[in-house]
Length: 150
Image 1: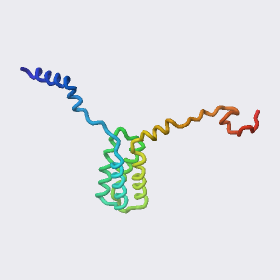
Image 2 (image 1 turned 90 degrees about the vertical axis):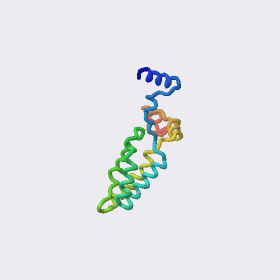
Image 3 (image 1 turned 45 degrees about the horizontal axis):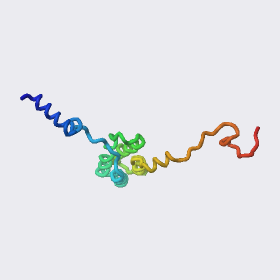
Image 4 (image 1 turned 60 degrees about the vertical axis):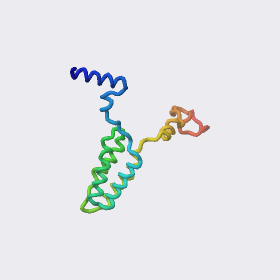
C-alpha cells in the first residue's frame, strides 16, 4: 500500500467527520482587546510616565505593541498605541511635557480602542434625520416664520 492510499484515506475520513486539515491549520481570527487588557496597558503607561524607569516603560511598550497588528482596530486607535510605543522610553529628565504626552495617550486608549457596542451603534442609526435644507423660504432658510420675504 502506498502513501497516496493513506493520504486519500485520511482526507476521506476528514471529509466524513467534517474536519479538514486546512481548517485545523487556520489561525484564530483576531478579537478586539478587552476592557481589562486596555486598562492594563493604560496603567502601565501611567506608571512609565510617573516613574520614568526602564521596567515600567518596557512593560507599557510590550503590552501595547501587539495591538499594532490587530486588523480590527481603527487607525485612530493605532495612532494612540503608536504614541505609547514611541514615547514609553525612560528619559534623562521626566519633563512635564513627557508625562503629559504619555498620560494623554493612556487616557485616550480606552476611548479609542474599545469595540463599538451594539447599543451605541443602534442609537446613531435610529436617530431622527433632518431633511436637507431646501433653498428659498422653507424650513432651513435661516429666517423665522413670518419674517417676510419676496
